[in-house]
Length: 110
Image 1 (cartoon, one colour):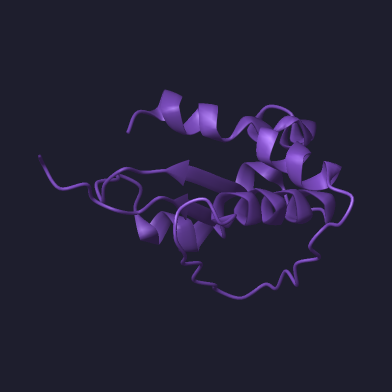
Image 2 (tube, helix red, strand yellow):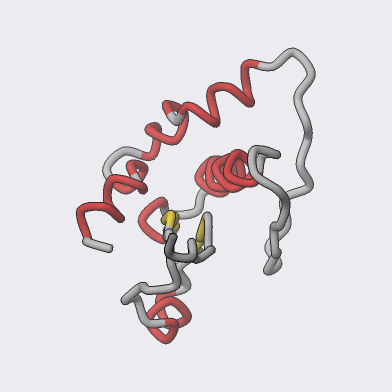
């Protein structure tokens, strides 16, 4: 994954208000009956079948963090189609970066 791709997936790095322009966030917040998620500051594993709201949950969590004063540049979200990524875990821990990975699966060759 190139730096450009990571930057595109994290538009709040440039402007924290951009999280509100995210299609999944806009859709979730436009519903008459909204789900109130209990966001915590603990590690959480989110699993489920396709199209049940995992990415929407992550985007709403990111919005919640930004709304509660977390520096947007310390929030990393990326969609990885495979397990190949070049960001060291040591760097994440040292800088207290919050990271959200979406779609961590490998698609077998056809």
